[in-house]
Amino acid sequence: MKKWVWVVVIASLICAVFVVPPSTATANADLDKINRELRALKKQKAEAQAKARQTQRDLRRIQAQKFETAKDIKTLLRQIDDSKVRMGSLQKQIKVINSDLEESITRLEKAKLRVYEQDQMLKKRLRVLYMNGNVSYLEVVLNASDFSQFLDRYSQLSALVEQDKELLMKTRKERDSVVNQKKKIESQLASLNNKYFEVEDLKETLQVQEVQKEKMIKQIVVQEARLEEISEEQERAVVELARKESALLREKNKYEFKYKGGKMSWPVPSVQRITSYFGYRSDPFSGRRKMHKGIDIGAPAGTTIIAAEQGVVVVASWNSGYGNTVIIDHGKDVQTWYAHIRNGGIKVRKGQQVNRGDKIAEVGTTGQSTGNHLHFEVRVNGNAVNPLSYVR
Ligand SMILES: [Zn+2]
Image (tube, rainbow, N blue to C red; front, side, top):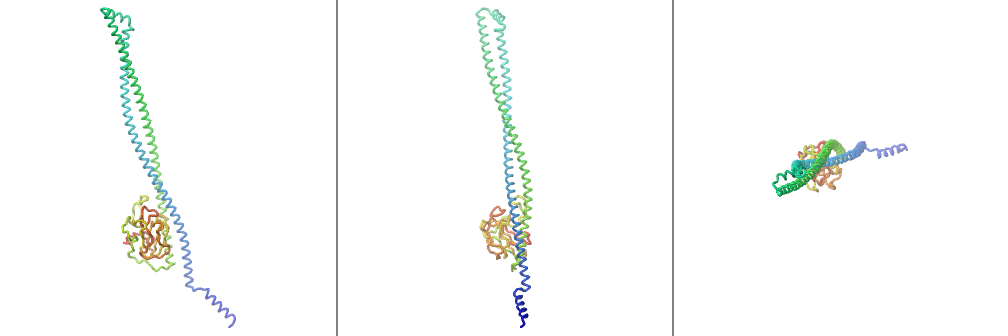
């Protein structure tokens, strides 16, 4: 054989080794593409989840603020009520003291009048006795039939004067004590009035504070609504990415299963009771009407959760408001979601294939949850549908 023939043969052999059949080459290129897309999605999803987590944190912070402010308002309203009660009782006291004061003014007037009258009486008698001394003396003497009668009359007059003096002193003392009493009542009244104005000031300050807090609550509610909107948007983004991811995983792994319709298994075999249904309800955190995208099955922590249908695990991790979450893709763009799983309660890995009835997790209360329960969702083309048309 000629040398060039060998060259051709060897070259052909080398080509045969290195050139793969065209069909396999396409498949490998596809797989590479899928893997690249999956990596990109994973990154996007991680970013979206981080954002969603931050929003959830903001939301929790603002809800705590709202709770505190509402508590403050309650306290303020109670204090305002208290101050109104105190003002009422002070007003009553002021009324009583005012009538005491009026009474003491009347008593003082009377006492002053008595002092004046007794003073006049005494002066009159003194005039009789001293000022018109000689005349009186003469009169007394002239009108007296004898000296002993004169002495009698004179001493009687003196005794009367002494009585008048005593009476006057007593009445003056009484008047002075009424004056003192009145002064006391006046100072009491002044201090009561001061107290009243203090409480009134306090009440006004409290009312201003209350109005401010009401304003704050309004602002918080607006912020809360905005954050909730953002949170829902972010949640939708995460869901959409998870959907894309599961579609790619399906394509990559060529799963044989395809959800054929029909009833799925009840996800918590030991508990049948539904504590909250699918549909609009008042949100346990914000109190506003909000769509509940699944059903809640109240069960003790640690209760077994099973896969409702055969499928592949596409999410087995923390997912913002959902807490620890498992999402199973059943093919035909049908997914089941299992949320609020207790820490350490996720029993499957992402990418793992599960059969209907396999234990996948344990009940908990992680994420936005008010007690141990499974939040179970069925999603078709990414949209939450009533799970009861699937599991019952
Ligand atoms: Zn729920």
